[in-house]
View (cartoon, one colour):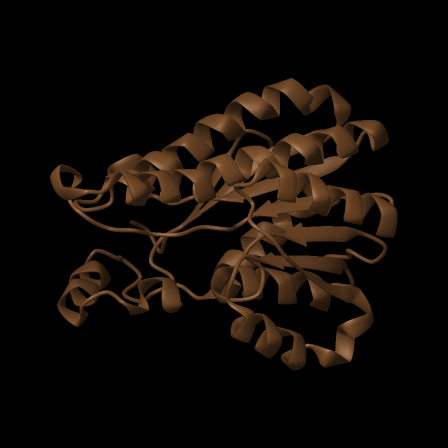
Length: 247
């Protein structure tokens, strides 16, 4: 299905590496102007920008923390002053700090919830204010099946991802009359650095759970995001599109 995002602007948080990079590059390939954000990995951001030098006129990078309200407000002021409007927000920023709950530090709990869930709240709140003025918008959050099934050692991550789905379903009802859709894409095991630090035996165990017998790619996720971000998806809201290989 061909997509045309020419003359549209997409914000992709955590958009310079892993799944976020694949999403950013997919939008760029379809003609969009992309604002890719990142928190701290300057090297990855530089590599991403260099690899996409041929579309430098449509690619903009911004460094800030999605969990900090003041930084998010500054970012949206920049967007408003520079672009005036945008059509698409992809909430992709996410971190993992694994550990069994009985031994989990408050810092690890708070950091994961702050980035994954509060970051989605902060970014979506101000995005909605902009989108409601133009009576159009697409908000898509990258969640995880972990929020539905739960994994040992990931109580903080699971809670944040389940919260994203609940937030999405509530927000979708609040803004539907303004032609703003709010959805989630829920990737399973995707072959990025996000799972690269897992022990090999653990990865082999996960692979056995996948009926399609392969880990997903960033492009697999990006294609789903493009569909939900398109004008053709106008009657889909409050939904979770699973991209898991059949888990």
